[in-house]
Amino acid sequence: MTTLARDSDLQFEVGHDVYKNSFPMVTNDIIYAGAAVGDNGSGYARPYTAGDPFLGFAVAKADNTVSGPLGKAGSNGDIDVEVYQRGRIEAAVTGASAVTDVGKPVFMSDDNPATLTLTASTSYPMIGKVARWKTSTTCVVDFFAESMRTEYHRNASTTCAGDTLAIPITHRFVSKTTSTDAEACTLADGYPGQRLTISLTTDGGGSATITPTTKTGFATIVLADAKDTVTLEFVDETVGWIFIGSTGTAGEPVIT
Image (cartoon, rainbow, N blue to C red):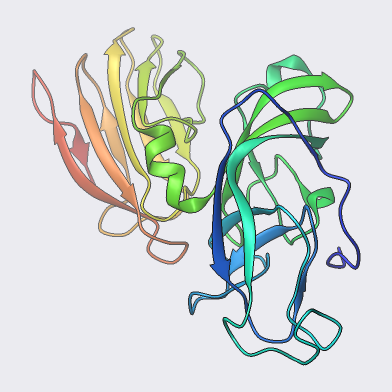
């Protein structure tokens, strides 16, 4: 989708903690109000581009071009853009359709909030989670800048039921249950710096073999007995998940 050419009508939900920050802006560009803002890789804010670290949503228009307050094409850092680093927005999220979408990660591919989607991609990281489903694709999204993701997930945990094969990446800790059969589990790419601990808390008799989409240093992890636990960290879309450590009662999980 084409990047924004005017201010967005993005709706921010009031009554929740909102964190603001300001960043120096890239040369000769415009960031419109409500636009997603990214880091260009050199520390300067620009309209969000797939692959950028997500900085937040612009509070107001910031114009570093000849039409802006400087009256010239500004250099890097001549003006700052103020952003909401964390908060809640109400917007259409492609792929959302029911209350069961609450808690799912949300992604976007450029600065236009119209590109919000539930479809993950290695080209762009998670920018938040569905906090509330309203109707059709309209959701309230709890968003957070990349610098706040570790804090957001620090104490979060979730469960993964028997015969549920996709290991969640939306929480810091996953309690896995197995059924009586062998389960071939998948693990999607996370975001850079994300740590994930998976523990077999209820052994139903079968084992869970986890195969991440992208990984380095190993191919699979087998959780076979209760209390088998493994911790991973996601580096980037090239390296993927790396092994940090494991523990077990009958023996450590098998890493191949």
